[in-house]
Structures are given as structure tokens and as C-alpha cells.
Length: 167
Image (tube, rainbow, N blue to C red):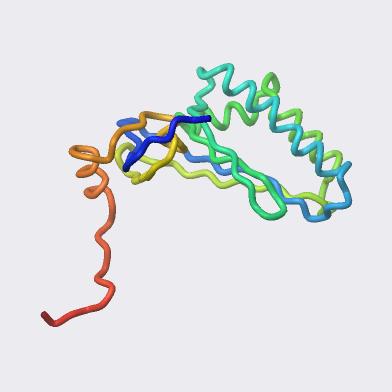
């Protein structure tokens, strides 16, 4: 079991990074032969990424939701992510081609991704009573006190007053 860190923690990095959300949605549960290979294709990709940090993968977290699974991934750069996705020597491109040949546009299984480029210092995160998780697990897990708390407050946009007052 992962160590639980009591209290408030945050992530620290002075570098830009990329957040990549990727997943699949099972649209037809009975078509196991169509969607199970999509699930299985992710494991070789993750094994490669964890074994080869020079590819730019910083870390990630699995996510489960109704009808699907996904991953929150953190990357050093958009170039690193793109290179992994398009390099024939890495497992993504063959899996992508196999998916397109097997399922095409039949609608049995859906796939999705979202990519966000984050500039240095332009992020906030807080973890309370959690193991090292997400960005903090992919970069540096630090207490949310002192300079780190100030930096988090400075990076956050000002919040509107919930109830306006004349006082």
C-alpha cells in the first residue's frame, strides 16, 4: 500500500510539462472481442514508458469511469508525446493501426484523448491525506506550506465574492 501523507501537499516543478488524458469507452458491452484488445493494448505502452524515462513520460494515474478506463499522463514535452505516438519502434503506432483495422467506425468502442501544455509555474494542485498522486507523483511531492503555498495562491486566478456585499 502507498504511504498516506497526512495534511496538505502539492506538486513542485519549475519546468513546463504536458498533461495528456487518454482513454476508451465501451459502447457495446457484449462485443468483448472488439473492446478487450483495446484494453490490452495499453499495458505494453505503459511498460515501455516506465522502462524508458528518456522518452519523456513523467508518470501517470489510471482512471475508471462508467463504461470506460483512461489514464492521466504527464509528459516532459509535446514533442516527446508526439514522437512516442508516431514512432514505429514504440508500441503505440502498431496498436493504433490494429485498432483502426479491427474496429474502424463500427461504434463498438470509442477512444479519446485531450492534451494540455502547461507553462512553468502555471498550475495549481492540492492533495489532502493522500499518497503521492498525479502531478506530485510525476514531479516532486512537497508540503503545501510556506513558499509552495504562496506560489499556489499567486498562480491561482482571483476568485469572485460568492455574495456581493456593500460593507
